[in-house]
Length: 169
Image (cartoon, rainbow, N blue to C red; front, top):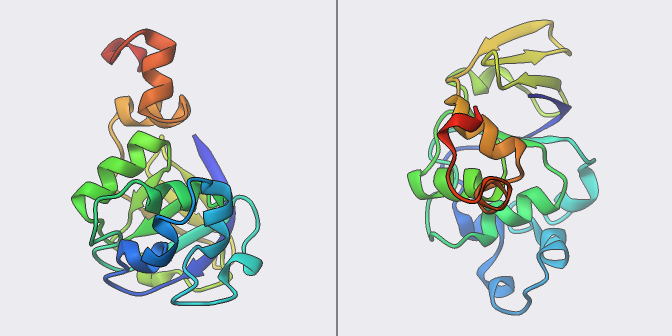
């Protein structure tokens, strides 16, 4: 599974309320509409800066805070192809995989600058920074998680196989 896009850089401890402000979480059920408010408390113009396929790149503990699924859902709905970070909050990690949003754990995420063009190969566990001609190794995802992502998330995987299918790798 290969992805390609431009990096948008954030720091450590980006919590779910920064990803999607609490003031929007209960005003709408329309995830596409909510995605227009992605990261607006950090960068009010963020949504206008992204192009389908771009990446969010961050430091440690991305997705800490509440366990609501709106955070990974709005990231995916905004067209972000993956989040690359040094580490992720555990519940955010699970929610992201469940909704089909790829997460890439990269200890060298600080070597990526805003605007760098990246290609991520989830199968090989590599982030290739095309701007800097650099390969960064990442913590590979298990094959079953890659399959769930390819299927569009856990619910779609269940629909496709009638349940959880370890053989679907």
